[in-house]
Length: 489
Ligand SMILES: [Zn+2]
Image 1 (cartoon, helix red, strand yellow):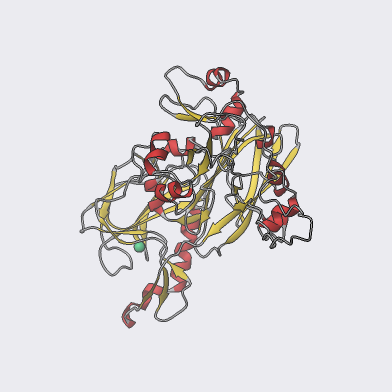
Image 2 (cartoon, rainbow, N blue to C red):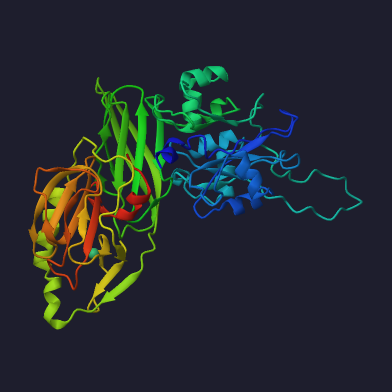
């Protein structure tokens, strides 16, 4: 899954328009960034191509497996070639002014095409419409001289290029510098086109897009001290994890806020590659939220960066839970508040060393009985609680497994959560395992992935045996199953 992150998207959202005059043969291509909900079938339809044509052009073995944010090279046929891209996906650091300039539109035109009232509210991942509507042609009046009517989509004048983008497969012994030199590019061009944040981290077999257009207009409006900036995924979701990763031109100390929370920053040894993991709390309203970062260099010079991020609803279902009158102890607000603040005090911390690597493994060989995020109402009350973890229905005695390496920072009995173990995986990532019968580890132990740390039970306030598995990021409980499928290392 890490290749998904490595294959980035800085250039990605920009649909390159290659003028028909530049290359006469049939290899003109455009770049399409896969959007949420798209399938290869739909994309193929959009470009009037077959699925096979796109799959083979991009060396896709399994056409059902495409990822949001993945860039596809789309071969353009002769008649499609003269078209101007109809949309632009906003990238981190882009401003409306900059985007308008790429397509030779005025900022006002672009704003009105997209009914934007405030030019500062565009957000990363937003799809902007570029097509100028065609004015209806009036019926010709033979008595009047013919006036030219409004010309549609005729304004784009993106630079011509002598080559078209193509895919290159990294060979053993290649470096980004070598590849860049071979194709007459700079390392920066290549790193930016592929959103490679660390140019030393390319691997044999990786596919790089060799950009055909060396256009300064593709540069983003990032401050000069920020070399690249990634937002993954482009659009965040309530209850899920997102990642900001950026490289700076000199060592910087970074602070920031998102969703009214302070951010913790994981920095590499020379302080030039920074990663921020954020959990989007359940109950965050869908909308646009600013990420505010302050970067300070060694001489105290500060750079401020503000990027708008869209948050979508997690679409969690609702459930009404009716507790028998003799079990209203499950709702004791004082007990619950005390435990919650105890958890916050442990899982809200940040260890600068990362112990996890790649996706997490499941905490038990058992089926899921209740997913994360369901909004709950107890005994007819408001839906103001949610299921903060994923439940596994294992028989009592089923082994509980550590999901990733880390240090045990809590192993004790709690009133509500029963026998509970918490593992610190570094970078502000913690997993919790509640309601166990046996606990085989103690605070200070270092555990490895799939190490047996206890057994499934029904301790604490539960109605039957199960493992409740929780994952916290930057002090926020998020859907742990996202971490089973994706890598945030
Ligand atoms: Zn649960």
